[in-house]
Image (cartoon, rainbow over all chains, first blue to last red; front, side, top):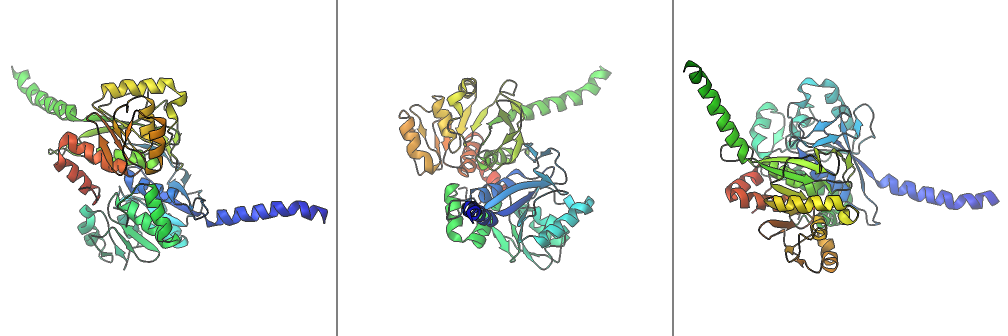
Length: 215
Length: 215
């Protein structure tokens, strides 16, 4: 009985910690050679800056690539991915930025990885020409999708099963979301934060980032 | 004479190439442990996406840190800096992002580097709490400066010589510019592009990034 009294506070702490930690959703961002910088750093910033009412961080953000070798974004910025597709924390949210619309054309392992992890995740969101990657994986068939304004017609013609829309910042098919180009990843991610945690927390996140444009 | 005829096209090509290259302005982004991700990737994206009328890239964007060891942004993203402050291409534009307002408190070498390179550059622009770094270097004395909304009062009280303004996306003192928080680096950089290359090219850059908010 005496031991139980000593154990009790520890057990309470552990339980509170697990609860706080359970709420943190894993945001996995796929990166690759030539990935567009703002396509994925916009979402990374949004999800990192989102805090719950109790002031704990809502999301755990990390990058995944085919392997953990150095990657250059299209701007030349040098990034070391956090995980490879062979060993990584299970994503709750999968973010697919643009930069190489033909990424899956020669990589069936990555294609299967995206298909499987999108299926198991709660949400998958493509940014910019990341829509081509989801479309190539068959994940946008019969879905409303958007992409960078300069690639809308190409997306329509290559993937006729996709319901391509233009002139919107994002589309929401429930589990699968897409955004228009580059900077729209910020808006789409704020929208996803509002969908998961409510508009109050999304607004607070936008305010934190001085992103006056988010409505 | 025959050799000259062969050499002529090569010389013309070389001369055109040098002219195009001469126009490229060096954009040096200072990064450091804990630097805010969007503070510097927003500007990096803008300057990388700015193209001249002849479709050549207008700027050469790179990162500089105290050394070239791996750096973590505040989101945990792992970056390898392109250059160290001991060996780097001369900046035309110096970008100072936020994340550690006390960065220069214990680093007089970096402080001197910033003072010297700001003096020799055409423009210096701070993003977010990067204003504290410029202020600590004495570069904002008698200047109009802004910063992240949550740090405005602190900037005023620590650096009374700075004319702190709030509620604006950026300030322009000619050579020294500052922006408000995180995402405002995108707007401030677009403004700097418009100042250097004209509003037409800034608008085209914003359009390319699907940044519908830029006016």
